[in-house]
Amino acid sequence: MDASAPDDRSSNRSAIHDAVVVGAGFAGIYALYRLRKAGLAAIGFEAGEGVGGTWYWNRYPGAACDFESIEYSYSFDEALQQEWQWTTRMARQPEILAYLNHVTDRYDLRRDIQFSTRVVSAHFDDATCLWTVCSDRGHRITARHVVMATGCLSTPKPIEYPGADSFKGQILRTAFWPKEAVDFRGKRVGVVGTGSSAIQAIPIIAEQAAHLTVFQRTPNFSIPAGNGPLSDDEAARQKAGYADLRAREWDSDVGICAKLAPETRKALEVTAEEREAEYEKRWAAGGLYFYCSFVDLLVDKAANRTLTEFAQRKIRAKIKDPAVAELLVPKDYPFGAKRICADSGYYETYNRDNVKLVDVKSTPIRAITPEGLKVGDTVHALDMIIFATGFDAMTGTLLNIDIRGRAGKRFSEHWQDGPRSLYGIMPSGFPNLYITTGPGSPSVLYNMVLGNEYHVNWIMDCIEHLARTGHRTIEAKPEPESAWRETVNAIGKMTLFGEASSWYMGDNVPGKPRVILPYLGGFRSYKQACDTEAASGYPNFEIA
Ligand code: FAD
Ligand code: NAP
Image (cartoon, rainbow, N blue to C red; front, side, top):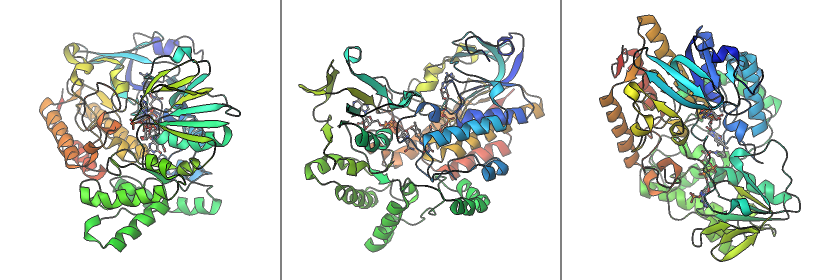
């Protein structure tokens, strides 16, 4: 299809689509699949040139998922599960992107998606009960339902320092990584940021570049990923146990169960030896298994301290220079209150002669100069600067779209003090508008592929309920929406998340309201609330 102009089908002003799906990552692809399966006419819009979402944009070296791919993959079709063969335990970006392309083609979904097209507005018409969705390429689509499958980590933060245009070298951003190979050989490279993206990229860049300078504001806790090839035997064994694995994931709070079951005890009710053994086990398992360790770790400071101290010891032991170790060991927030990272040789990288760590918390970055980065009064000379500075997470992407609901109500006003929507899925005053893995849902704290599947399933039940009962619109009632928001905030306050400066709380974006963004009550209680709502005929929603 010609990518430069809207095709006839999509720009046909008279046709009413059943649904518009914005975004073609894990959520959007599955939403299009379900809508097609239900016999509904849907059209997808995707800003990128292809499917994949996160895995389309984030092509930086080392990008990979941080738990087993057998789990970080769709569960909806047993045939798909059995036929796809992962080659790496935690697949790298090219393999995940290949998988999502495979899924798109397997179910012939590509023809429903307009690529290189950004949705700029979605307006609801009270008289017709229809949405008009417009794109930056001139589409104007009328639809009954709008599914915002726009992603939680899909709007990278801008470069926050002046002088980028003056830099004589190359500036790159992990979240907009070029498709062409990037050659670090012989270059003096600077990486700004030490979150998950940087932590994956740094060891690989250090091996190739002449010199690497890492500009760190806040150190993170990172666990060895323990990644490696997946043998055919192991893959066959995993596939044979798929049904059981999926059942356990759906019945868990974090959705990661392949290697270790969630712990049900409290850290402070076991002996110090038992605690140490539990931590050693999860450290060895690799990746994110600490999220399902002792149940009190993220609510009880004393319990958390036992794990924080364990992780600090582990990190310190990896770094030869004690002064560098002191900078790399997180000390001023509880383990887990910022996103846990997973790495392959991250801390060890600082033992290399060609790597230098610069603390930009004590002396902040001031500007980008023609020669490099100016920190305080010192210019660090660089040929390439890589910004791995994160995202306007969970709210930024939606707030970039001009969404207007009943009586022209602006979405940006509805969310001006922080996000509000019932179950994180539907904001009141915006009928038939659905958000996948949005704020107010477990979202980024549950296996995100399954979280997206769950939301799409719930949304499809909703759409099918309307069709079955002869109704046209469904929207959250304002009171239950407020109550849900209070629940999310109250649970957030019971945890230690507020003790760190993190994107979970909106802290990483200047001026963003400080509220807990994901629902922290765990997926099981969340699922129960959403399932009960649907099973009892949506009592907290207005159906008209
Ligand atoms: P996305 O994949 O973000 O897709 C949303 C799409 O919507 C994007 O392609 C975007 O271009 C498009 N879009 C947005 N706005 C518009 C618009 N206005 N018009 C048109 N298109 C639009 N989660 C895990 O559970 N495990 C992991 O290991 C993991 N690793 C990650 C690694 C990285 C580098 C990042 C950034 C995130 C990672 N995540 C991980 C979170 C990841 O975002 C989710 O797992 C998942 O890929 C999200 O899928 P999605 O479809 O919800 O959103
Ligand atoms: P991030 O976790 O938000 O990290 C951004 C880093 O940049 C932080 O170290 C931050 O420091 C720093 N930073 C931000 N603005 C800065 C500034 N103006 N000056 C100096 N430093 C600045 O972003 P990310 O690494 O892209 O990861 C985002 C999320 O995506 C992760 O938390 C995770 O959920 C997901 N992800 C997962 C994987 C994976 O392993 N599968 C990989 C990548 C991403 P502060 O902490 O001080 O703000």
